[in-house]
Length: 221
Image (cartoon, rainbow, N blue to C red; front, side, top):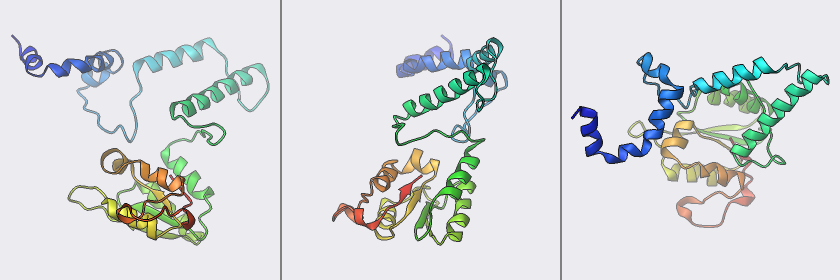
């Protein structure tokens, strides 16, 4: 009996994710060929072989023009772009009456767009110390428009922000705009902090008191 079969007998639950192994073999075999261990999925996902093949077929079988014109090839490109926007909104269960998908070169360009267009005047920009450089860069725009910038400390012991620190900042330092890092969202803090800000219902310290709807929470990113 080989080592892998012994492992399967000792840990039978491993077989429950066999479809991931099949997907890796089918669409990401280059990882094994190159002996890669890729972990930076929050920074950028890896494209699948099937995506390359399907995109190649799409370009090979169709002619796409400038989506801002009205000729047949341009209308075909426009339809494809708008269909993509719709698919993105559907994926996030986002109401198209409230949200719009905007394509940018990368996350840094998207953050720059948000920072330069957001009405920061007389507000507060609240963020954690471990945010991406591009998120930290928005503070200069906030400063230039009269907003106050507040950082929530991140202890090095566990790289997590204490809930009471966020509660205090949201409840006592409003109005504010909350920006948390992907690391915080994925590993330490619940994403519903943004929901509280968007709903203008901030949780008071220790969960006591009434929602601070009248304190003017401006939004979250």
